[in-house]
Length: 322
Ligand SMILES: Nc1ncnc2c1ncn2[C@@H]1O[C@H](COP(=O)(O)OP(=O)(O)OP(=O)(O)O)[C@@H](O)[C@H]1O
Ligand code: SF4
Ligand SMILES: [Mg+2]
Image (cartoon, rainbow, N blue to C red; front, side, top):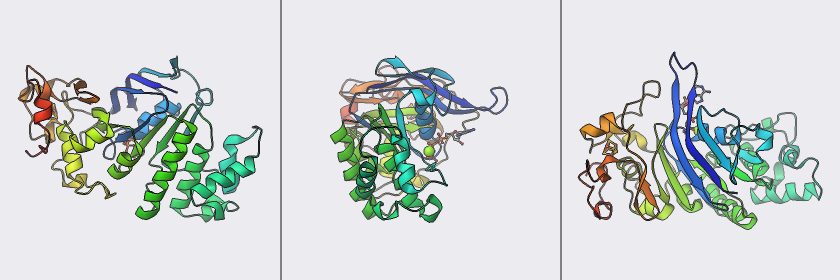
């Protein structure tokens, strides 16, 4: 089903004392049957976004709609959303088979067969009789993913679903998980640090930084010709897209303070192209190419050096230090 986030914000904690601005005015539109990946460094607000969609965190401001119906006011059970949690969230007393089948309780059909089928797809068929504490982190992670994928839900939210796996197994399972999502016509939001995974699995990418969307668009365009200086730096930090390590540490500077976030662009303190306007005004997320949007003053007609027609195209190939 289609998903729409309209200027969604999440502030944790006491609003007068040290509030954490985890997600800021996030807009996101996902079509029915589409897979979108949220990509960004640790702490940029990916999990908070998923947890608001699922209903495990309240929305501070903004609205979330699923298939046109407002859901941020509904309890989680009424949203029909399946989630693979970053921390797995398996029930310790239940076996892996019971954990996976839990989502199908009360439904008709051969539940055991469905559990075996998804477990084999994710290479955990041999562990169905064990309990979570008898499994490795990677095996528990796949059990959590199986529990989400077995459900014929309105929306699937997958939070770093393969982050604990060996690169080879991860590469195999990416293909299988994507095929499963496509076969069933699921709509999915994938959260990942892994650019290779995002590129292999997603139709579209939203790049987040400091709780905001920096750039979004078709996966191919984002990886082959990113517009935003942060995206260029992020992609430039990983020389080979198949490498699965986050190397943002090699980008100079540190992530923004979310308690006292910068007034303007969150990337301004680290951006090699920073201008005066960047320090005081938040750049809107605007389409600069077909199917590619960026939130950056560089592409603004009035303020930016790249703001003239065709500038987005000319900027291809530049990197963040360029
Ligand atoms: N319950 C909470 N209370 C206060 N702050 C929180 C809470 N949950 C998350 N945060 C903060 O909100 C910010 C965004 O966290 P979030 O978990 O959404 O990031 P993330 O992009 O998923 O990071 P990672 O890649 O490390 O999982 C972080 O600064 C985090 O410390
Ligand atoms: S808005 Fe300014 S600071 Fe932010 S990425 Fe663009 S040029 Fe850099
Ligand atoms: Mg997270």
